[in-house]
Image 1 (tube, one colour):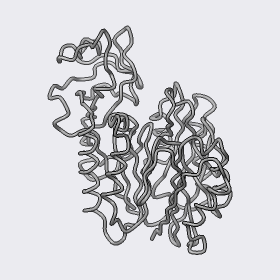
Image 2: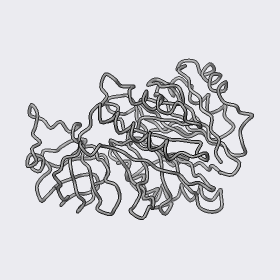
Image 3: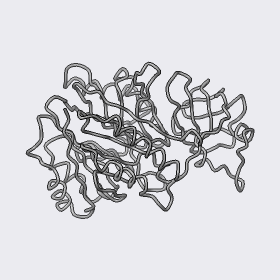
Image 4: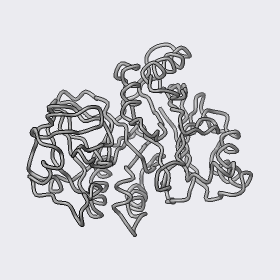
Length: 387
């Protein structure tokens, strides 16, 4: 069983005051044998020393990331620090970290994973990773390296994000230390049966036309139906606006044709060659369609997923982790807290702890037709894990 505690602070400037506020909301004496902290915050909490002070005050490891908005029970904030404590007598938490110093990602991740595993017998039931948003290195590469190292152990986590125009301030957090290149993770050992929820677009927001991906490499989509991406988009009626492609308004929906639910891919840019640089890997021979995302779709899909979570929850579920893509946040425009407000209001009677944060890329399993969990990296998506 996992017991949860949550806390928050808006105190950015005074580390001692912020630490006191967090400690005042958490019953340290009520901790069980094993504990883990998850922290999400606005970047300024790092610069002021608040994150380091809070982590130093905790008698357990803390992992987390920077974000553009956080929710804990009863409280929503864009410039807020949220804190969730998981504590248990029968679930063990082992943490690890690795600096991604070159493109030999598989070896670095494998060694860090094995080093963490050496601290515990058996195989973990689940892994919670937080990954910095590293330029020129897609988050999917890191997530799938961890998938390979762990032999498919379910991954649920997020890429760090921030509110700057180029996301250059994002950082992962590990026991008060923060980094733009360090991947941090927690291995959860014990009798866990997590439930995963994934939603991106409503069906009526996905165009009916389907194309086959005929040429792609990693996250670069080159051809659909043997046409350049730009030619394909024009063939299905999508045109430039004022001489430019409005790529943020039409993410791709990719069906792997393997029985799993289709996933979303953000388009970062369209090159002069007509290639699309996307927010995750694009597999050849998969099926592609074009989706759309706007305010109403964000609120509707989040509401529907929260209803599914509440229907699934039983007396043994005491913890809920949630992340939503920054693209969804941007789609809310002037009403930027509305998705967070919906989460707070819908989960008002949730009998457990939860934390929500905005993400630069979502890591969550999808289910096969046989009901098995298969790790995937997502864009433009709301994900949740019920423990």
